[in-house]
Image (cartoon, rainbow, N blue to C red; front, top):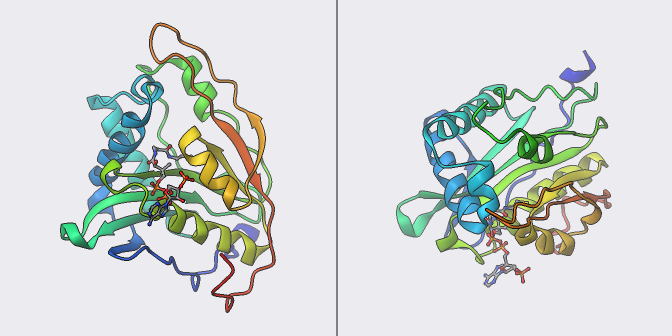
Length: 225
Ligand SMILES: CC(C)(COP(=O)(O)OP(=O)(O)OC[C@H]1O[C@@H](n2cnc3c(N)ncnc32)[C@H](O)[C@@H]1OP(=O)(O)O)[C@@H](O)C(=O)NCCC(=O)NCCS
């Protein structure tokens, strides 16, 4: 019963950078989201080429992840797409958030992990989530051609505003590329995740657990950020 109470504030909107629109993802663009995953993550570090290889089964797995999240609805998982108006509305960025549930349930619909994946990396990257009521930025990526335009910043500010409006903490696991942006918005390093070293493939890769404490939220304060 408690879990039915809505913990997100639908009146909070993204402030997209000029030339971009941010809107909820739809079921017919799950393949676009998967394409964007590989474009953004797999091009950023060889760690991702091993952890989420761009092969048939992993592509299908990601298509399923997005579809399950979109079907679950924005009160459980918020999936956003960024359109580039200068490219006819092409999808160039995305973010996905776990919306807090009052009963602390994870209730995150997820397909089973693939037997083809390296089990140690699966455990290190996908394992272990805190069981408190909090917002969580699960994924975020931007087409390399559109990076450094403020897209992640806009996606992030929305999630910070939502958490502030609810008075809740915001969790994420930061990549080196994302971490410095998150630090600017009040996320604090907690602990490095136990990443494995693979000298023969990707070398080393560091993900850092971060938490952002809620700040006072004034919906009318346009200068907050
Ligand atoms: C991390 C990632 C999502 C950042 O996306 P992005 O849209 O380029 O991020 P932003 O544009 O908001 O910010 C990036 C930088 O550009 C700067 N910037 C923002 N708007 C800008 C603008 N209009 N002009 C120039 N620079 C700008 C930001 O200040 C930031 O600077 P910094 O790197 O010195 O901190 C992207 O690099 C990516 O997809 N990486 C691979 C996947 C990944 O690591 N995802 C994060 C998961 S935790």
